[in-house]
Image 1 (cartoon, helix red, strand yellow):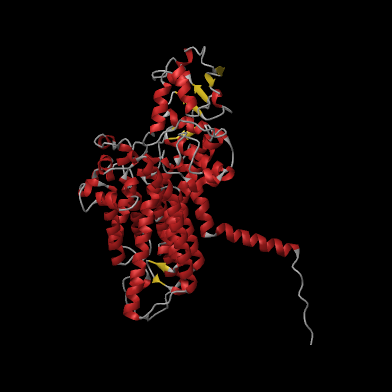
Image 2: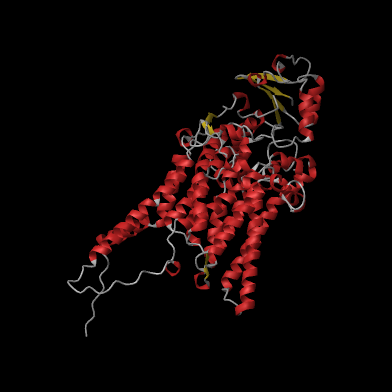
Length: 604
């Protein structure tokens, strides 16, 4: 008996195998989805990538603040993690990183590069990437629920490029919603659950469930304005799932639930709750120290959009912006009240209520979710400022009083509408389709070839798939932007390498956000900063600096630990600090030097 010796694979065979594996990877659905989402993001956020270092989307207000936030998070974690929440701004106040949503989850990006230019490049790249992640997240969720590729692409496009999001182009924390959809998709996959098939224990994957909890925790770390409602939704989903499991147990006996999945849920839930509590603690500390920062029902009422706002597009929208100009004039705060999810999306979602791959009860539940999300996004407009209503959440739900603008909850409306639309664009399963027509009688003469009908069926199927591209194109068309990209304020020479603690004058208005961005050059401690409230210490230092430089102001600033004052005359025109640079310093025991167009005063 002889045996054949196995021959080692030749280099040619190895190349063929590697080439085939790479070809399969390149053609894989998720490879194409990720690459397609990046390409769409580059196109639909253009011209962001054209000048990464010199311009910034929308304006030089909040984007410069958020560029600083990402930079500070990376800097603090690299140098001194214990000082993370005590940033270099608003000196000498503590917990200043929690004066607004932190974008802490982007801190790893902040570990790469130094200075204001790197901060702007980093911000612009993130601005593009968050759109790509939103597309991938919603696509993955729709696919997991049971939608086809075309329907899932529409859900992803609507979630990433809804017209209302263009009004938030300057708010990276509002645009950063991809983790919501992606974590829900991972959790559903981990639990073997979909809308089309329900709970299938044999499809449970504990690893996916654990990853879903990690992504959910990361989403919360980006900020509570979006993360807090997500945490409440996630808690509601968990309670509903537990109730459904208990009901099934009572009716039909204990359903199988893999032990590994139970452990993944317990560990993941504890991790998520731990991250949420760690993130919340500094915010509670800020509210305790600065009660004026707490949102009131009257404040929420001011930003509550009327129902017509949900049918109005922002001016940055290419298709509807000019057409809705008259409607915007009737809104109190158009940037927060132009909440159009998309005309095409609304039409597709309505079609999904009538004909869909989703079962009727699921369609009704999705419709209920849409209506509830609209009611919440309308704030006090829908049910007023009494109970029950949005005011109930503000006054009784922990953390809800920190949400300034209820209209941003329209992201949930958009996501649910996208799922309804995906159902309309997905073929109805065979077991729920109309009964087939009776078989024709047997031919009596020459048999008719069967190849022709099959070929016609394949041809119709191909044309049907091409037709499904039209809704996707229309949804994307509604997302085309006219967002301005403005020049980034250049860092003055007087602020390069300056020592802190310092005060930059003038100290008021949007220029404070620019100083925060410029402070990424070494992160010196600075009194400057801008938030939704003004700390008492900052107000007192500003008041004392109005007479600077004189004996009283110099003594007071020294007492508060200020070592350097930088005066920027080019920005002081029309402010209370106009003319500061011309005031004498004789007899004050301080040193003044001109650096570029600014003046640096050394008080030590």
